[in-house]
Length: 177
Image (cartoon, rainbow, N blue to C red; front, side):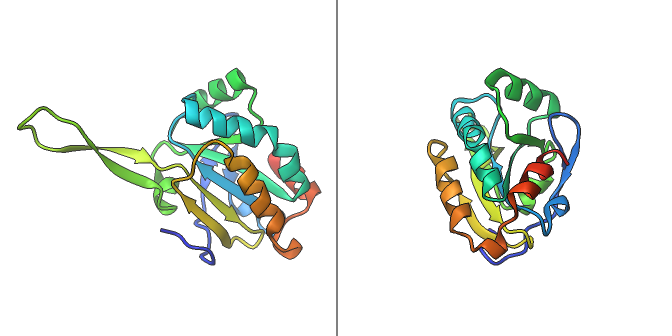
């Protein structure tokens, strides 16, 4: 598991509009709130994405960008975004390479018929990372609750020293990068 003080693993993932987003594009410019969630359009994931979207202007004023990551494909992300009017950028990690780099992939047991060999399924643990403008993890939160999490993360962004945060202009511009 990643810890505060660790260098954030690099990533390069497409968003719902097929634009490639990298961690490097925010270096020196913006704080990144990188949240991993299990699946588009499920109750908890919808609550979390809506709450982040509702506070997106506040995050940007604080110099932060918010990026949601799941294993869903870009088409699913587009439908999820459009259905719920989401403003956060949703990134597709179909192969779970980024999720593995951040330590959020879990193998969960699946119930089987008596006598059958035990099976597992791969799942993404709802987790969030606060990455400063220097690419250093300031918060690593695993197994978070969906409801109220956006407000909690905004408080954590605002608690960062100004030198570790980005500027509001950079955060707004980074969303379109």
